[in-house]
Amino acid sequence: MDELSSFGTQLKIGDGVSTKEWYVPGEATHDMETGLQADMINRVKRNFQLVYPTDVPSGYAFSALVTGFKPGAPVKGVLTAELKLKISGEVTEIS
Image: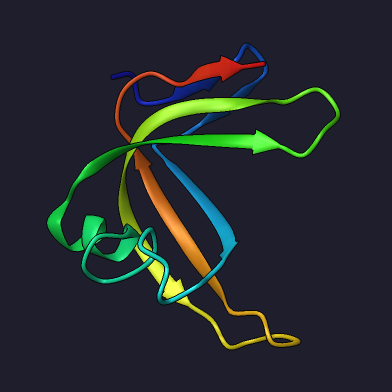
């Protein structure tokens, strides 16, 4: 893999992506046994999609390792978590 992965022809990134998401501790995709936290601990590579909330779906698909998962305090009753991903392989544009 090159030092930079390409998002389409316009956007270039290093080997990582950071996002903030709603965090539901009991949800299977978030918990310590089968979710993102387990994937981080066990260094499991998963497929991800970064999808923009537009009328016509668009975004990017890639494989990545979870390298960070930091739960945050609730704001107006909603828990959040900061997620860091290390991209492994090609990034493809989806539409």
